[in-house]
Length: 426
Image (cartoon, rainbow, N blue to C red; front, side, top):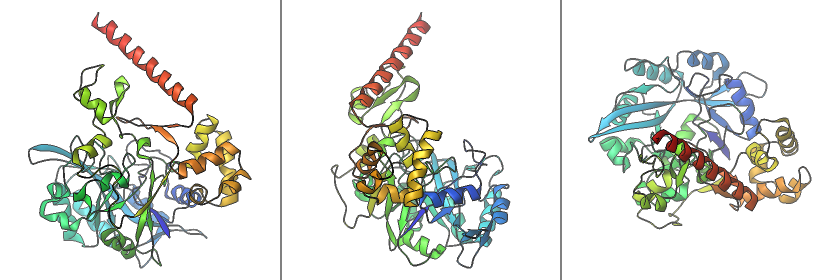
C-alpha cells in the first residue's frame, strides 16, 4: 500500500508558513508514513525553479529528492476560479496534477496568458471550470483536475455559498473528463455516499497543509494499491478506482466548516438549529455560513448511515501531535508534546503506524496509559468532538470536564459579544 497526499502548498502561497521547503516536506512525510506528495504551487515563478533545483524527474514522471534515501513527489498545484455561471457567482478551487516537466511548462505558459501568477501560490483566474478542462485537455489528456475540498462553503464545487448542486451543473458536457473529488476536512466518505448522483465520483483525500509539520501534513491522505509509484498508476487509480484503496480522514466534526455558524459572534448551529433560526445569526442578525453537514442534508437522497456498493475503506484519525497536545493540555509544538511524540516515532517508525496499527498493549510500553487509550479510541471512532464552524476548527472532547469547559468558554464569549452589542446600541 502507498499513501499519497496530493494537495500541498509552498511558502509562496497565501497564509502558508515561509519556512516550507521541499526537503522539509519530504522529511516530515517520512515521519508521517506517507509514500509520496504533490509539489504544490508548480506554476509560481519562484517555486517552479525550486522544484527543478531540489528534485530530479525520472522517466515515470516522478520527482525525487537528491539524497541517499530519496522521497518522491508529483507535479501538483491548486488554482482558484472566480466566475459567473447559470446566473450565480462561483468560487471553485481545483487541484491539478501534471505528468511531467514538459507538460507542466505548457500549463504554466497557458495559465500565464490568462492572468498573473506571481502574487500567490494559489492564483485566481476569471474563467470557468469548463474552460479549465478545455485548456488542460488541449495540452495533454494526462493532466488530472480534481475539485478540492468539495463541500467547503466558499470554494468547494458543492459548497453552500458558491457551489453547484451536481458535477454536471459545474462541468456540463466536460464532466466526463473529471473523475474524482477531494472530500476535505469537514466531510467524510459516508456523507458523500448519501447523495446518489455522487456515486460515479471517486473520492480522494488530501491535507491541504499550510505548514510542513507532520501534524498538518498527511492529516488526510489517499491509499493506493499498485506495484510501483508512477504517474500513470496514480491517475489510473484516481480515474477508474482500480488501485484506489481508500482514504485517511479526520473526523468531519474536526474540520473548520462542518456545522453552520458565525465565527465573529461565536454562534455554532446544527442544521436543525439553523432551520429554527431561519439561517440567521441570533446575535448580529446576519446570515449564517452554512456548513457541510447542512449542505449534505440539502443534497442527500439517502438516509444517514447508508453505505454504497463497493465503498472504499476509510480511516478516521487525528494527527498524533494534536492528540497528545489535547491530552497533556500543552501546545502542539511544545517540548513536552514533542518528547512524547518522538518516543512513539522512535519505537514504531512512523506516525501512521502508531495511529493505524500498533496495539494498545504495545503503546502502553512507550507512553502513558491515557495517550495509549486515546489513540485506540480515535481509531475506533469513540471520541467526541465539538464541531468546527465558519473557519474555526472542531475541538476534541475527551471527558465531561472538557465538555463543561467548552460550554463555559462559549457562554463567556457570547456574553462578551452581547455586552459589546449593547454598548454599541447605546
